[in-house]
Image (cartoon, rainbow, N blue to C red; front, side, top):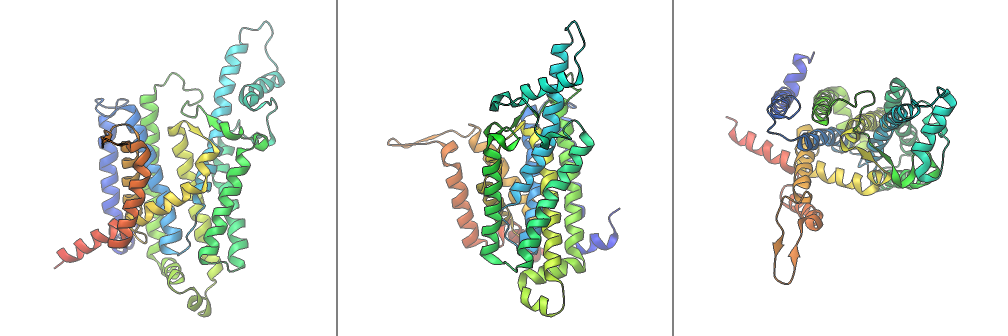
Length: 390
């Protein structure tokens, strides 16, 4: 239950939950899987992925907009969450295929034969056949779900402890987070990383044991799960920033030295926020990539975390709903411009193809927001609300 005091301190919570519930219900009713079929399965997946991106934007807003830590590595945690759940999806799906192919054998296959066949099926593309030790729990959904939280959480905890105890701040901390992301991405590109190198994990949209269920239904399931996660994430973020803890981290953002002299354990507060937001990002990734169907190391490249910061800045950092607005707006516009739905513009000497020019448009929009609306779209809403207030 959301306490009344939270709704008083953060009135946007109730508004957001109601809007999210109405949106979720409308998409479900209009979907092909559970409704009248006006919204295609592919677009339901786009909307589900957009909700996941809104969730990681909330995490970014907590760590940057409220705590003042410009992390350029949170997409690494997002990708790790996707890899953890992707390992189970790919292993179990491959196991079903292997068992089906061996069912016609004269003698039933032994567990070792099944495991060897799974290893060859998954890792043959990178010249291997043995299942790496990092896949030890890949046959257990409960274990992989736990790893979705534990692996990114422990990485953030260790990295944050080392960085914050050394009192690295500002642009130097941003560079460190970017270096962490780059190192992880380069490691995953290697074939001997145990995660299929550049090939990544694929076929994640196929749920093991549910091959008879059409994608139109599966897409709605993931859409509903993404909406639930976003709603819970919004409430959690509002709770974190609305009380004393939120006041302290905001004060750390504004004047870290003064807060330290007042006796507050600044490093501990920053570590809690950094680790918590890493876990939120990982959960968002675990829901995103089964809808995308594939994950590879390119998804963890540093540029992705830079885009994330741009989304939050456009929406308005320091405003939870602003982060959601920025991520949703950029995600949907990106799908529109890069999906071939916007006609090219012939100029005679050159043809503007939006698939190539979308990122330029995004950068130009970021510059305009920085110059003329430094508080983002959420700041414009705040100004309108204050203007209409009696």
